[in-house]
Image (cartoon, rainbow, N blue to C red):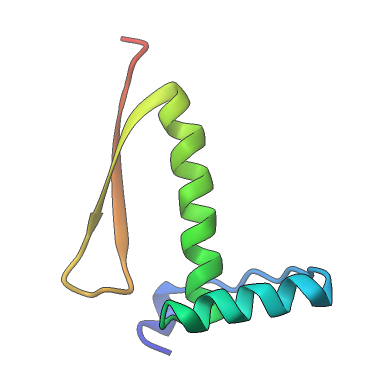
Length: 75
């Protein structure tokens, strides 16, 4: 795993039928299931944060990392 010391493990369980859907989707988009789950979580967080703030995601040179900045709308 790249940058293992900068990564954290999250354990979750889903129905077996959902796992197959996730695997198929990830495979179709040429990504690992872990990457798909990470992106899905980031998308959900972004939507939630955007409801309250302006969020900007940026990709670093290392495609495994994404950074975000936000500006509060409640000045």
